[in-house]
Amino acid sequence: MDIESGMDLSQADLSPWLHGRPFADAWEQYEEEGYVILPHVLTAEQLGRQRAALQPWLNADQRGRNNFEGAQSNRIYGMLDKDPVFADLISHPLQLAFAERELGKSCLLYACLAINLLPGETVQPWHFDDSHCDLPRPRDPLSLSTFWSISDTTEDNGATEIIPGSHKWGREQPRGANRPDDFQSRAPGGQQNDDGDHPDMIRATMPAGSLMIAKGTLWHRGGANRSDAPRLIVTPQFCKGWCRPLEQQLLAVSREKAARLPKRVQELLGYNIHPPFMGYVDGMHPSRTLANGSA
Image 1 (cartoon, rainbow, N blue to C red):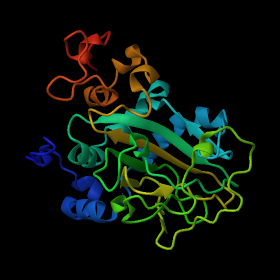
Image 2 (cartoon, one colour; image 1 turned 135 degrees about the vertical axis):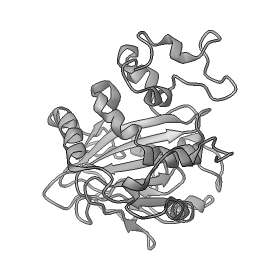
Image 3 (cartoon, rainbow, N blue to C red; image 1 turned 60 degrees about the horizontal axis):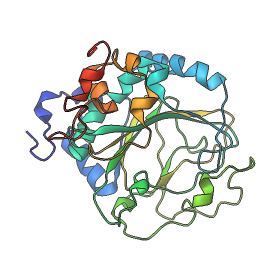
């Protein structure tokens, strides 16, 4: 039993997705470098289901609204309200083994979105995902981000750029770090004159079906898509059970649809408590509010 997280790692057989790599080795890299890439986690059939569910929303071609989202990117939010198949990614045992060990069993779904970088998209500003918490660094992360490659991510099509070890930084920032005006509406064009390449950065290239897991304090950014095809990922993100999620999941997913989701996914949405009783509703466990009980 992992006493700090309350997670019994012996209960989960992660070997089908680690392909011979010990979990302890993957965790050590995650702790030291702030990220780990785990290739070939999803099967071709699983990938096909994810792509099919995403396609109607990709066809709508809704573009980003600001420099952070990207004028040449599609962003799909509130994913569990759109199709329950996305619960397969959110509740994947390998992903949850990292999330629960890092954040505790009471962790919540912080956000879940798909990001489709279209040809011509420019680099995103550098950022780390739990910066909204506005607490001094260095510190332990309050969130964990995952990146599922639904298509191949390559050097040319916008693979996420990361700075290994930057989760340990204090107040230092890379050139091109996000600023308040990056979240304001703007004309198309993006960061045409990017000078934010960092000498230690790498591009997280992954074949389709792979999973990258990163600490919420790791500096990273979406890359530029210099290819002639889109780059598609789904990024579920988790936070500690006492934190406020970035996306308000209890409103993003209707109660009727939440009632049909797997119990663990309901808990990640917020139909759960952080011990001893943070998150109760009228003195009772919040899962009692679901219209039709647990799925």
